[in-house]
Length: 462
Image (cartoon, rainbow, N blue to C red; front, side, top):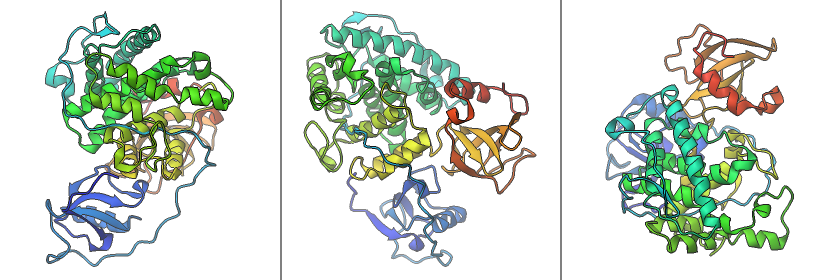
């Protein structure tokens, strides 16, 4: 768990009042009614939302807001009843991944990129402050696609060079990490959406890009500095470099590994760390993520069986991001889980992850990430388009009638009911389930949904 300063204290939700600074929660993040993790409680509507939620207790920071002992001006507190927990599918036993330490050293300045001491030019996809301005998903999507395309070639070349025994010059890789971070800063969904478009054959390479993207997103949710975020991006790109020392036939094996094969695969963190420590320009934080991203918060992970705060913050972040992308990707030996299914299952793995980091991760991507296929209570299918202030109630694009078994003119529906203007908007509508696209004959869903969102609302999205 992340250490709490003396000014933080746990109080019952019913003790909340305006003027308090919310610093965290004591409960399930899926029940938390807000997108923001920390904020000053100044609005009655936010106070009531917390009281009516299933959150029984919160963490307040008395150094930034009022204490519970000071005079109160809040309305009488309600005592909410706990709702039924989210449905938990049968839990398999994958091997999750934690790891990393805060390091405030900045990365290298922009320069031509060289991979494994081989110089190549990196395109400039962003420029100055304009590259960091928030933009819409559609606007950032094409630019993010270019970055991912270049990143795929770059990481493939990097890993191929490492297989040949060459060292890494990370000062030439940092600009790519910076481009990923800049894209996430402009729109937190575009990059993460595109990196999901990977086949099982390119998993090893694309996984590193996906973890880098998720690390940047999570760093923003945790409020890390710009330098820490740059290192998180680089750490994501390099976290699995040790797998290049493992025979590829083991990484791609469709069946279960033998005990001997599993022990060999589990040497990749140590092998990767050894490579990074003799390479140029690799921050200590990035090397630490590589070494410890398979540690577990309860001390049962590998290679060093670290526990709790013995695992650095970046390594704990890496653990969550690595596992999430792994279980939601098509692998030679398993079918992917839906994003919602992955988040639900990961919440049941007690002792695997830092709960606070996992909670921040869920908030960073949403309970239903952009691109998720969902069924609504009104009998339609929709794709998640944007997150709202209420994680369980995103903005969706409706496109298919289950009742009539036919496409319908697409329209947007804000399930949080904040400013929903479409004639079809129903105050009582809600998500009832996250759907597997294959069950609806949409096996190529990852190429379908970007087109659905790019089509204008009110027209046929096909």
